[in-house]
Length: 378
Image 1 (cartoon, helix red, strand yellow):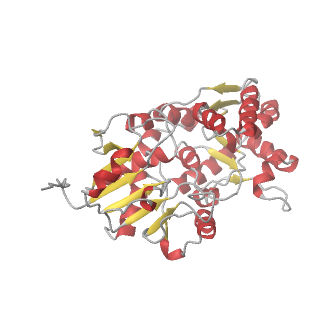
Image 2 (cartoon, one colour; image 1 turned 180 degrees about the vertical axis):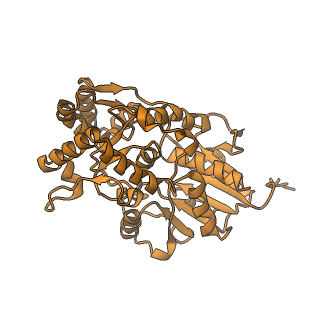
Image 3 (cartoon, helix red, strand yellow; image 1 turned 90 degrees about the vertical axis):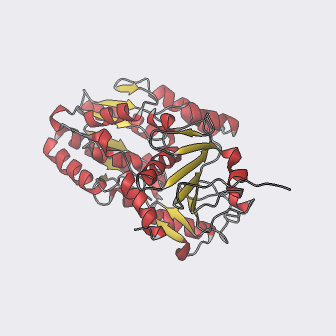
């Protein structure tokens, strides 16, 4: 006779988040130490769900199976998900940035969701994304919803809008009188860093003491480019590394969340000449909490995240926004606005206060509540 053991949760309000394999093993400590992206979302949203009295199990690429973080989130090795879920009934199942398991096995849940994160789940719009079993796909901005629905042919009734957030306690006691002529770049290097570095000499000509802090680690991005055999990406990285050596740049690499927040609070501005189709902009929100004025491109998810608060730089109407930051007209306007914000404190505070008002709603608790509202739990 076969005996099957069923593991009972403390209550029937359990949430399982599946992220699967990653470029490096990670847990809550890794996120606090500076890991960003969808891993941050999983760790932070899981912690908020626990505070809201849910049991949370996170299946990821963790160093040790079964560890429980200080917030009460249980971390399990992703390879164990299939067997585990076969004997555990799941109240709410969230697949993060992937839908691969649900296209291969029957999921033991009536409430299956996918947190999309990227612009789409697969580049091939004919790929199986589990549309027959997924209740809803969570997108991050109006642009994201529109693109995702068109790319995967998903009806509006299977979409809901959520958000990312920041840990507001990291950004307490912002003192504008102590801010420096400084900006912190912490986004992926392929989202405008090269263009910013090329504009830096012109900015420093007008503001000689301006300093650009680059707080981003190259390792995973470079490793991925090598593994995928992407010579153009490797050339991009090599060019950025050369530009980082110019005067006025301080490359600090990946730093922990508190150190990053402290650097951002010392800065005056965030200069982000992005060309990338962001689904959301967590760095923009961090800069808002840090009390900084923002110059960026009005493209994709930046508009939902930033609203009308940043100084937006448009490019030639005949070109798509993804090409704007390479044009002389865009760059001249970007440099001009950057210099004005650094020289005119009244103007800088006006924009910074506007950004702060727009972004203060984006906390991890607020993000978690969008899910509870969707589930009818509040």
